[in-house]
Amino acid sequence: MRAEDWIRPTPQGLHVGPGDFYIDPVRPVARAVVTHGHGDHARPGNDDVLATAGTLAIMRARFGDAAGKRLQAAALGEEIRVGDVRVRLAPAGHVLGSAQVVLEHAGTCVVVSGDYKRRRDPTCPPFEPQRCDVFVTEATFGLPVFVHPPDDGEVARLLASVARNPERAHLVGVYALGKCQRVIRLLREAGWDAPLFLHGALQPLCALYEELGVPLGALRPVAGARREELAGAIVLAPPSALADRWSRRLPDPVAVAASGWMRIRQRARQRGVELPLVVSDHADWPELLRTFEEVDAPEIWVTHGQEDALVHAAALKGRRARALRLVGLGEEDA
Image 1 (tube, rainbow, N blue to C red):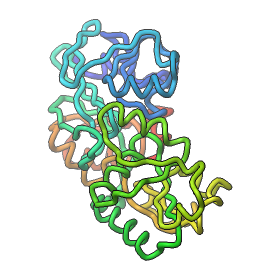
Image 2 (image 1 turned 180 degrees about the horizontal axis):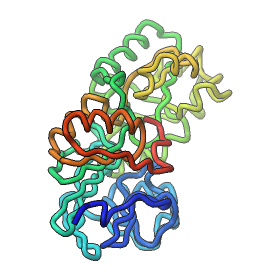
Image 3 (image 1 turned 90 degrees about the vertical axis):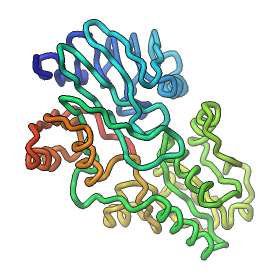
């Protein structure tokens, strides 16, 4: 049986017929398998939800009782039968709790990657390639222009700027889930032991990461901090705060953004970013192509992002490729 006979894109999301469940549904459904906790993949209102314990903890923190009526945690590598489909979760390396969904039915193996990256991340297990017949991939940075530099070099640029500007605060725009905690850990590994200051919107998920065993070091809320205390400090906040009145409490802040999109300098200028850092939680172009080789799938399906370029590149390597054009994905910070 061909994969397209039992797994199909629908308005609700990717539907797995023999198990009658959806992967990362964009609307409430009776049965969902969720790859990770970002808001474009994990949504409230489903009845049954299967995910890793980390993802379920994030969903409970974000959605409360609306995370799902019945939540089932699956360990990485644990095989669970849902209807006539064998389901297994494998590390995706994207954020804490993120997983690929490995599906086996009628002699065919399909791997739905969700979002993934191939770089080391001190906050979550690394991506593990899964050999399969069909690999379902994202394409957030599916253009040859996207080649991410080493993370430690970008963090070194931030610390060099802090050293050059001891009278200024460095305000770093980071997404609340994953990017924030990863940047914190990268700074700690680079030798920054001083307290890091947080916008209030980042505090709950940082506390959750620590509860789940990811140490982040000394963190302080910006609220209540003296202005002179913030001179020479590193402050983390949502990207929207860079241009918000909230930032006026900081002493002459250097606007910093940590995102794969900072590879596009025009985008950095449009956002008023003084120091763009290319730190991404998604695979870049060479890493996407390397992943295709490692999973050795004869067929590639692309869910969202720069679908056409990646489909073309896969076809040039002799793989059957198609764009699914799923709606509602790819709307989170990268």
